[in-house]
Image 1: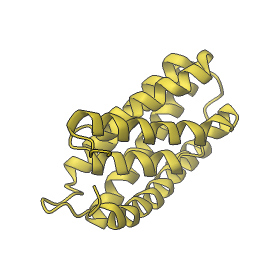
Image 2 (image 1 turned 180 degrees about the vertical axis):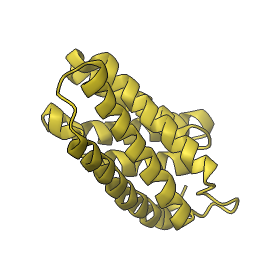
Image 3 (image 1 turned 45 degrees about the vertical axis):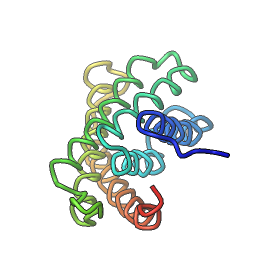
Length: 173
């Protein structure tokens, strides 16, 4: 007979499951385009932050960052660091905006603000590092604006999807 998972085992199992799903969503997409496909990652990291007690998105992003590093070792330190920053930003903004009430409900407006802010910020940080620090491509103000807009839109959609999913599963977990 199977017993329910407890404490740390449950936390690691959920984080690892979400991390593998994030990895699969990025694994078959070539490198420049996988950064634009952030919706599955944003949704799963948001759910991890809501489901797991502390640093859920950060824990999940560490595991997914390590998995992506194995797949693309040439971008190893950058991919891992940006992945961890994204998870930490999500945890930070979800906590700062109090997107999860004491009763366990996700507050939609606050969740959308937290996820869209974190997603837009990590997009800008990623772009800044690749353009200005590593000089992989020339600076372009139009691309700056598009990354900010795409990050914001992806964050809003991911926050909404996470809220809908959370509403359906919160009584189970």
